[in-house]
Every structure is written in C-alpha cells, then in structure tokens.
Amino acid sequence: MRVMLGMSGGVDSSVAALLLQRDGHQVEGLFMQNWEDDGRHGPCTTDADRKDAVAVCGRLGIPFHVRNFAAEYWDGVFEHFLAEYRAGRTPNPDVLCNREIKFKTFLDEARALGAEKIATGHYARVDCHDGRYRLLRAVDAAKDQSYFLHALGQNQLAATLFPLGEIEKPRVRELARQAHLPTHAKKDSTGICFIGERDFRSFLAEYIPARPGEMRTPRGELIGEHQGVMYYTLGQRNGLGIGGRRHAGGEPWFVVGKDVAANVLYVAQGSENHWLQSQRLHTEAANWIAGAAPAKHFRCSARSRYRQTDQDCSVSVRQDGLEVRFDQPQRAVTPGQSVVFYAGEVCLGGAVISATDAAFGGLMPSFAPSPRHTAREPNTRV
Image 1 (spheres, rainbow, N blue to C red):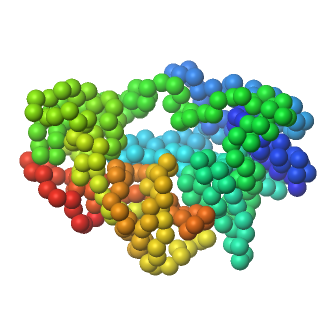
Image 2 (tube, rainbow, N blue to C red):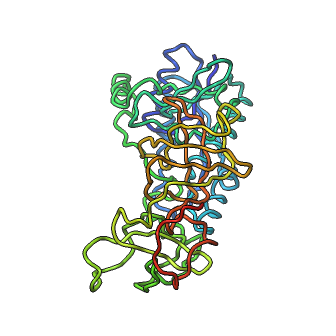
C-alpha cells in the first residue's frame, strides 16, 4: 500500500515511517510547513525540523515531499485562534489544526500524489467495528492523543494509519536508536510552533493590542490592573502581579472570570475556591466520530482538558449543542476548550465548551456579574 506519512522532523514520525516500512508499505514522507517564520516569534525550528525530516527519509530510503500550507493554516486555524481570544475564550488550536490541516489539506494533497492512505505519528489507534471506524485510545495512556483527534470523522479515519498507537514511548526511542535514526535523541516539541520560545502574551499582543483594565474580586473589590483580559485564562495563577495584600491571607490568587465587554478581570484566592467550580456545561454543536450521538441522553466519561483523568458524566443532546452534567464538580472548566467523550477505550467525539455553571468565571461574558454584585453561591443554571 502506498502511504503518505506526515513527517514533522521528530522522533515519533520518524519511527512511524520505520514501522510502516517494516510492515511492507510503500512509504513516502511529506513535511508540512504551516507557518511563515519571519524571525519575529523566536525559534520556530521549521528549518531544523525540515532538515531532520529529510535526514530520516534519506536514512530509510523513502521519497520526501515538502508542501507549504501556511495560507490554509492562517485561514482555517489562526484566524479562529485570534477570534476566540478576542471574545475572551481560550481556544485549542491543535484540535482545529488536526481537522483542517493534517486530516483535510494534507489528506487531499496525499491523494493528489497517489497515496492510498495517510499516516501520522499521533499516539492513537483506529479500528473498524460493525462497519464503522472507531478512534481508540493509545496503548500508552500517558501519550494518548485521542483528545486532539476527536473532531475527525469516518472519511478521515478510513484513510488514516497510526503506527504508534500500539507501542509505548520508551519503545519508540529504543526503535529509533536501534535503527540509527538521526532524531532518536531529539527532544519532543511542546506548545504551538507559531509562538516558539517567546512569551505568549508578547506574541498575542502583536495581533490583539493590550488594553489594560481593572482587576477585581467577585465581590467588586479593586485590587490591581490587568494588561488585557484576553491574555488570561481561567484558573491561571502566574503573571497576575498581585503582591501581598493586607488582610488577604497568604493563599495565591487565581483568575476566576473575564468580562470582555467591561474589560474587567476577576480573581479570587485559593486553588479550589468555589468561583472556579462547575458541575454542568454547555457546548457548541458536537462532532460524533460514528456520525451520530450514541443516544439523545446517555452516560459516559469525559475530559474537559487534555491532561485530565476521565470524569463520569451525563450528556443530553440539544439542537444548539450539548448539556453535560458531571457527577463531581470540576475545576476551571474553560469556554473555548474542548470536552471529549469516551466509552472505555473508544473516543466518541467532542465539542467546544461555550459556558458552564461556575459561580462566576465559566459564564459567557454577557452573563458576568458587575463589580457591584456581591459574592453568591454557585449558579445551578447554565
């Protein structure tokens, strides 16, 4: 089978190429340039990664292709990223990049080059059960990336191979060393390439100008100034610039709410303060990997952020999205992020969080209380 592998220049895609080749596939590598690096954003490493990808393909003796998808990335991912931050939400560009670039633009290009299937170095698995393709968790639970792949559908999964889904990361490193791949000791990349190593706030300020404003407690007490509400996310502790305050005690401060219209950032003390707790959330329209929801009302487990353990919940499908009720309160559930659903090892799909019933911070900006409001118990309405 002719397989086009997305080569990132890292050890994971390198070993994916090795495994595909050993399985007898006709493997070719394609390096995707998704960002025009003008040097302003620190070391994005695109040039170095491309050279590493070339070296791996040379070592394995497989053809190598380069395609520039920067325009598609800007239109399909980055403009949405900026719009979400302007609205006071916290987006996850990796989810959109997978849907719009790696499993759409790349898939189309691979087919144009004659490939029967595509492959990536993601840690996930695909199988076909009762005529439907399923996205499964990776064997290595610590590296599982099904959370970031939940927006895929039947057409994408039918055309995709995940060679690393059945093995654990230490074994990947070992295979790379044994095969003398030049990326065997390369450090794993983290974060978003277009930001590089620079400060996130400085990067975002180039596209969304700083607009300083008041920093208040939920009770309305003015305690400082923020640099722009869009630069902060719920549950954030670092970078608030709040020093010791008289009668405030020694507990750290956390972001608990953002009122974009009023340009007010709300903060409270204590990592488990009730302002950050929520038990219900609303979402935008969901993507179901099987093509439809399991039922109108059903139970499953879910994650509202990537590194979270599975949380039991009930899901109700509505015309405008989903209502999700967790069995236990959740901390810092953040609009703009994704909630992803599982039934055992099977990823069912997911959706973007639009609002929560947090006492303060999870509500949509139009429902945020004014500084004159006093503290209250958590809402039971979404």
